[in-house]
Length: 137
Ligand code: SF4
Image (cartoon, rainbow, N blue to C red; front, top):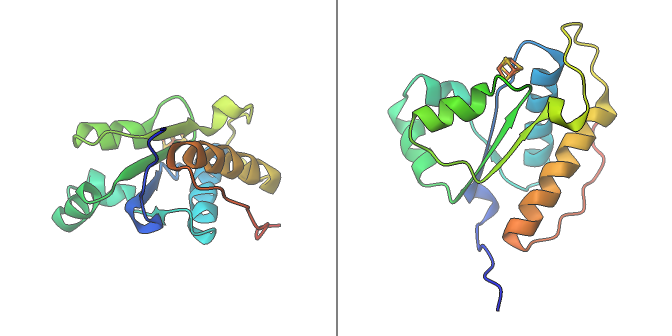
């Protein structure tokens, strides 16, 4: 029998780079969307980078870590890995065909693309099906 994860949504922790580009902000909004859908909790990456002890301990208690980066520089991934955390699911927004720029004209279907991509990956890992409500227009 296939083993399924039994993580509660509050044990699925989501981190995004929230970088200063369109793809960084799309990463941020996709993390917001996953949290709005109740798929996981959005956690503060800056708290990990700042070695805030309470946040490090809360992250250790997480059962599934999700990281979203805007681009191949991989700041969220590297921040988590430097602190000793293993990432369970990871995506770079730019890998999904969304070109990086600094004009901040965000295309909300791009946010939904990243959100759906990760929801599907998390679903496969957890065995839980998600039906995304379209909140963001
Ligand atoms: S991963 Fe890319 S978009 Fe995100 S903070 Fe780093 S350089 Fe900026």
